[in-house]
Length: 500
Image (cartoon, rainbow, N blue to C red):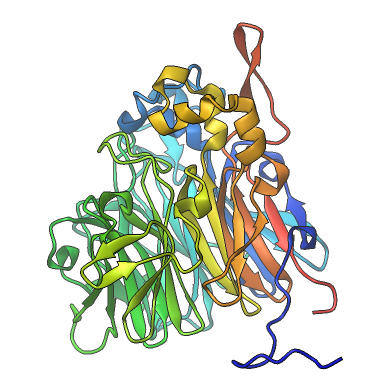
């Protein structure tokens, strides 16, 4: 038999299927309050993971979620902000050694004097990790951006050279004149660290996605506290309320914005005198408009940049009346043209756009509100989603969106959760044709988000967001009762093929 021929080079390595994945961390690593695998990085032959804790309890206090139509709150939480601060929300950093298959907590946030004088957690989450060697660093280090609660002094950046000792290397608030509580996108590029603020300091009761400072900052030495504006404010467009995602690919840095008229994507070679010259590549969410509100993820793959969209609030922005809608995937080609890969067919100023994958938004699933993370691993591109199906369990029937109520005429809530509940993981070898790895959160409907994907020599690590621990609301007859949930809390899965 003749071997098959591949006109564009050797046959790709086989992609990972569901059977290639094993759970290596469950139940919030022993503490269901560890809800998000919010940041992950492969460093010195081990996986490092930063947690964010008690997410649904925090959201319960936010004004933007005050009118969410839950029959009962999905997890057991404090009733007031003062009681919330009595929870142990000190964020944690964990290390996984594939050689021993063991986890170790290597850092826990300290308690500090907060606003008003009471002790508060210095940080409640670690939102971004990046390996970087600053101008005065003796070796590459693991940099971590910390998310501070509203009553804490402010967000900061930490650094570790050995993965065990973490030191604060920035001032509280990071920026001198506009203190912030966190950033979601530490990105190394051309010998500099780049980031954009995610939330203002002191925003306990507001959404955490806009800061009033849509600017990209850079530093060749983050420990020096010298940060320079690398872009103009909002790239000169007042509609850009935040810069959500950064991606370094080839000789350019890409930035994706949050914009109520549809996200924008900009690119710069970051050469010359800052602020640099940036070029807009995509406008108005690829002309889908408000339903492509923000760039939730970006990564490079085979010379192109892939852009995943999302609508804040889990795919349904009640504050601004946007959604619900599934996410789209767009590819920016090396010549700066773009293709619609997954999404809604439409006419644009550049011509008709049809999804090259032949799949509509959300991979055909309304509940895939974010294409939350993208990464390349062994010649394949992997994409993880956020899927809010499981939240229907606690949603009042007549308050559900009209499209969802039509589904209730076909099947019950629990049938829908059994069919679609849990985040998706998809893969593609060419960027056009996509195959599902799991569409049901690795068979746990509480696994509602694939938050991080990390490629390593040990395999592909999948970090899961699961906010339904440690105790979840369960219906018993006409009453709701909170019970321990062994399937709640973040999970970590590892995909690998023996012998490859």
